[in-house]
Image (cartoon, rainbow, N blue to C red; front, side, top):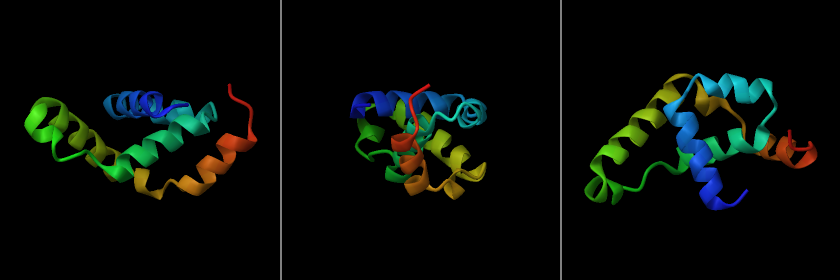
Length: 88
């Protein structure tokens, strides 16, 4: 998955937080890892001046992600699982 695809997956999951459970159940480790990486990187502050609505939406999504326990997801383990298991 390239950087653009990872960003699209992460943005989708931030907009649809209930889907995270589905992705975990389906063992879509690469997509979940992309979300965790995106959330940990946070949103570029420059986006606030170029696209304030998108910035606000992404920041709210990341905040919800961490409030719902997303910070407890182990990125190293997700990446290991993503490389060791076949894609669905």
